[in-house]
Length: 347
Image (tube, rainbow, N blue to C red; front, side, top):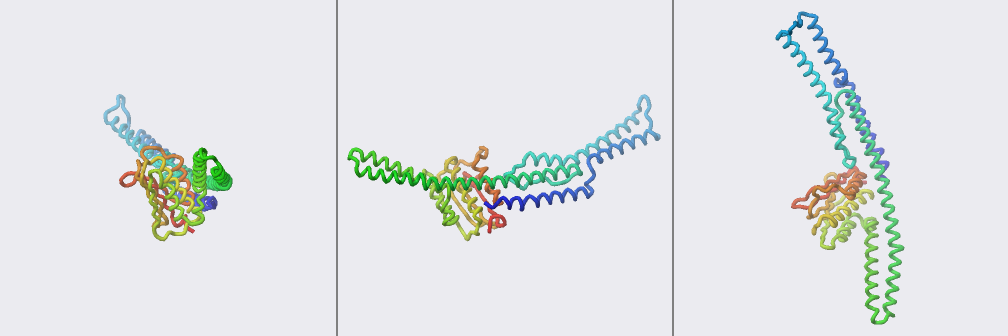
């Protein structure tokens, strides 16, 4: 699909270079004092002050006098407070890193903890950011290869269904017609039922082949393919209204295929799970590129976890730098939005 090279050469090096630059800047500035030296310096200062006081006029009597106890307790409180402050401010970046690691999602890239804190902490955060960049790039490259192989296999299966199974069923249908012409009157009804079943199976094979390999997308373009897709799903109590408005920018073949597959999966989820009777399929220009909207009036997302279909949509969106969001629609139902930016999705 021509995406693997773009992902590896266009994203990861920039992020890695930026992260390395940030940690170098942090180590060369005033925040480069390590956590070890901060704690050691504070403890050393407290011990030096305590030793100086003991060597000076301050003494400890037996039994301990009230004034002496207050001085010792005050010094202890100051030392503990100083240690608490150093540890509190020193561990804040690690707490941010912990939250970032707990919420990291390779399907929602871009979120990175800020490189800050002592040298050790800044180095750890930078290493984590670099690792996340590499994982996102490798996942995107692997997904691109997998989806490319998947599309090739779809085309092969669609071609075999059309050329082999479709032609076989067509031959059976013609043979049944000749049998019906010669059959006795009492058998013609049964032969006619066999003809109808064969014709329905042939239509189903053709429909499956069209869904596996959207030939209309290659021949007539994205707008016509989406209108045809809406027509396919307008059945069994579901009405899909297509709206393709405005002058749409020219998308790359990869971006058009992603838009089509996301629309297909969104309508499939609507037909299978949403119990909706109305759906809208809209493709329109966006200030940053193109926006696809699949909206239904069904039961909504609820608390169900995202399934393989939604995960597949997110992976496809990442391949072209698009953003996929799922949110409740106004008045009930679900909105599936795919935004393809100009910088990533256009020729």
